[in-house]
Image (cartoon, rainbow, N blue to C red; front, side, top):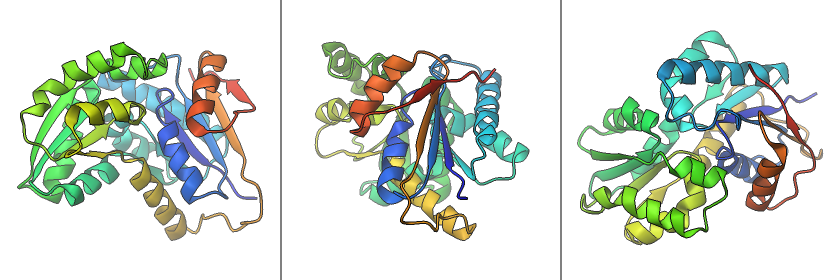
Length: 266
């Protein structure tokens, strides 16, 4: 029997990756865990982020998954090497795919990165970009309020536009032509961010590139689902309130979530 792909995030943002996995790998089963009780991760210490990420990984392994996608930029930037040291199954983060796409996309060699405070302070995106092309200039900006805005489903509220203006103003004068949305929550604010930055700035959402990497790894490891006729299963778990997650997730994914379960990871 085919095993599922496990995906975890600090909250609802990782569904941007899940949505792309649906499109590219429609026959793969998916188990999603959103750590909604402890969101946001971006304001917490490195030690705490690593602890939470290991707990989330253990939870998904209990579901007998065949690989894990760390669909959280904060966890990917600070905890991914530690997770890989502890577990043998394939584990994919979101930093490298986004960095690769941004390096490919930029025409003037000036890339902006927005993310949680922990992600920006880690310098993970800048390190990957410089490793790929050390001539590129990187301009980073922490946007800590974006995650709670998305989690509270305020993306269409005036407060979202006001906060976005405040955060993005420093990047407006940097002449960037590419901006990495360095948190899986941020694509849900894409229209606001694009409006402020202007159409000349290309926004990089790593979710599509992550899905491509997942497919490549599954093929390399011989783990790709062989049963293309079966209907895939999708399980969703959260560590806090189920109803809010299910409501927002259903609208975002374009399908009603039949069974979201509450699960503890501590």
